[in-house]
Length: 144
Image (cartoon, rainbow, N blue to C red):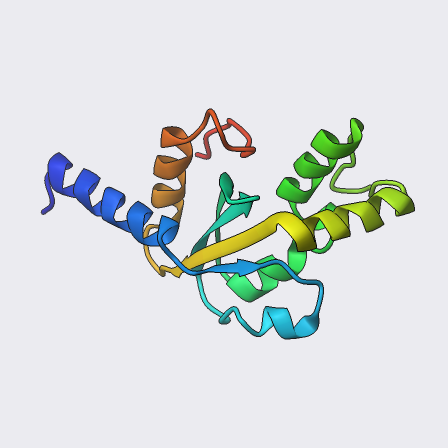
């Protein structure tokens, strides 16, 4: 059985592997999605090189596809709110002109790194979000 110190060391090693992972510039092209495997993963989103979001998913390729649709990803909604000053929801989009501007912003500024991880994704995500909560756009709620 792992002790507390060993668990923290493992969490830190996994965090470092994620933050050191190769970053891919966001693109709306379908070819871009092929850069991501159909596997479980942690992912880190950077805005102009600054870490702004940590997520976990059961399918990294599908989750990256979700980034193209405002109703499907909270990061896209949060970034849009920061840029445009009004909210979209999981049921609504931004104005069409703002959706286009958001796409342009993503393609110029957003990069994503990921780490395939099949076990403990939620725990590692929560650990990293807690450590970087002051700079992340993640919601501050804990999952149960």
